[in-house]
Length: 412
Ligand SMILES: *Cc1c(COP(=O)(O)O)cnc(C)c1O
Image (cartoon, rainbow, N blue to C red; front, side):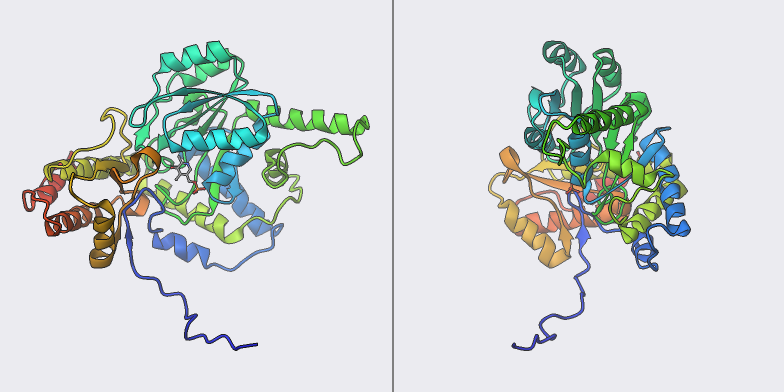
């Protein structure tokens, strides 16, 4: 066997990039420090104590009193999948409120689960009006309504006030993917009447990807546990080969995950210890800063970014009224090669900005200011760098105007 020459496999020493895309973003140094803390056994009382603390710390962040507020191990998509796999029984009708890439992701997962999928759609760059959702609910009589809060693919935030009442009146349950907004825009899960809301760490919570906070209402938890009993009943009646008709996922079975996070501590998986430390520190940083102050900081960053981009003479993508505060879509100007600019931003300035998916690929950049990176100096540096790159590519714009406008707009 040839020896592995470690000169080619050096110690990890990545460049210090400033991540100003739609996520992931740079993690707060306190989160990285928390992740280097010593490991514990998964049933150690210190460890289960930390798990209980995480449950308490995430309730205010979700805007909920839900007992079942915890973590799913995996990236944000793990919690999305766990929610849909655990809520939906094959043949259930699910209405997806769809206004971007992540509405399509919900449909992809639901198709695998065997749901009957209905949609109510908005064109990319807009959101779905509440009365359209109301008539779609009436038309399709769904068991579940699923949507996104902020869809980073289009940079739009779906207004959710009043949706819960409609869903509840129809006897359905409401699922919301808040990955892109948790920690940056206010979540009011209880006021929305949302039954399950899920997130991730790598956007406005300022952590690495790999842990997905989730909150589950009593109604949703009852639905999930009851479904399990029904399945177990079928199995006990011996209707199958003995393996039982258990459906969905084992790893992403929220009933089993809730049992693990309950006093019963029924073994399921091995809780991802270092990621739990990270999630706990993300929450501590957020609550220490103050939730209002944190939302205001993201709003300032969004105001500064949009003002700066406009002052450069660029055109923003999407509706102003429903724009997310923490990520901004901007058209790549005619005659400019978007990828060349992104490369120049990375090579000359060590700054990453985002490209776009699907119908927006090659048409817009997405520039984020999330979590640890929703900071005035980082927004100003990004705008200054973008201006320099555009000017170098021959795009004429008023020198210095972006940074001036952004400094002004930060204050509000
Ligand atoms: C970024 C994002 C995700 C990402 O999921 P990961 O599994 O963490 O990559 C999911 N949903 C939305 C709305 C997002 O913006």
